[in-house]
Image (tube, rainbow, N blue to C red; front, side, top):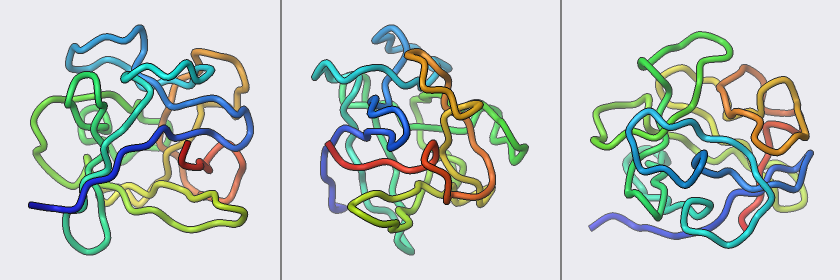
Length: 141
């Protein structure tokens, strides 16, 4: 059995939690930021795979955080998807300062980001190059 820990992921720039939109359990549902309310759609199991990578699964659905269509494009949408099928569903935690880290995708090398650096609730999560900006950094909550 692989190592697993569970936590909320709180965006540095907005202090909002990565959430599954509308608490839905469907494949393809978007990951968004939303003020933390303690729901299982805002909590994530991080399951160690190999090489320092993790599959990140929504507690409420058991589905993995995925890049839609296995895309490597800037701005590709981040969604939840049931079956773990490849490196587009694996991320490594890149340590930053003050307890924050960036989540780098194994397949594309890009980082989990809040789209457009938005601080609005409901803003979509996408992948984007870099990893050093506050909208690309998260802490465990």
